[in-house]
Length: 124
Image (cartoon, rainbow, N blue to C red):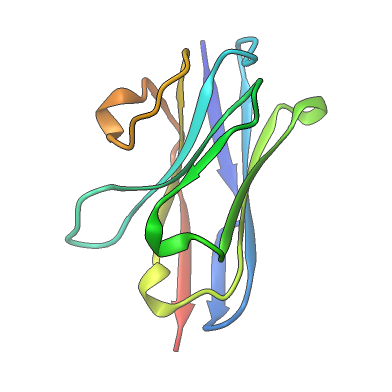
């Protein structure tokens, strides 16, 4: 059973940084695509970034390019989202997601496994 556990959220001032972690367990993830999504109150869940576990190839939503970085620590089976230059509009619950194959989708429905989410609040 795949388990994804996010951590690292919190309250930060605009311009600050946070690093989110997603600890993955229950499978060998070498062929997986891992994604980060977020959902603000009253809005739909939206794609933030994704990474292919073995190839390391990444893709970002336009609104985070140059500010966020997704990465993997193979030894710890953990996916990170480094978030810099945070803005109040980045406030949301951030979710880690996984698909067992190589996917190029930004649609939440294409990801089979989800974590419980971690709250990020950016004050102005």
